Image (tube, helix red, strand yellow):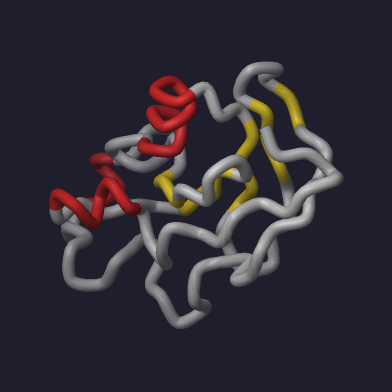
Amino acid sequence: MTDASTTAPAPSGTGCLDCDAVGGWWVHLRRCVDCGHVGCCDSSPAQHATAHFRETGHPVIRSFEPREDWYWDYAANAAAAPVPVTPPLNRPEEQSVPGPAGRVPDDWRDHIHR
């Protein structure tokens, strides 16, 4: 696991890697500090960030949203201590939320998890 003595790898992209693979969409993005995988949040239909934790055991994520710098530890179910991460620190600001533009259904609010 990445800790304060190392720097987390660069993000896997500017959007959810798994949603992009199947033409899906997301609400917000999360970044794994162990491997850089960018996945969608638990409000998103597919919840790929949590699925990545379950599949890999990588417990700590960082928000990949602009102006957010919080970390979460899935294993502890609690906030996690920050670790240095390789830029970029967030998705592009011009990227739509939810996103990506063109793949979000008009009734997207009916598909999110609350």
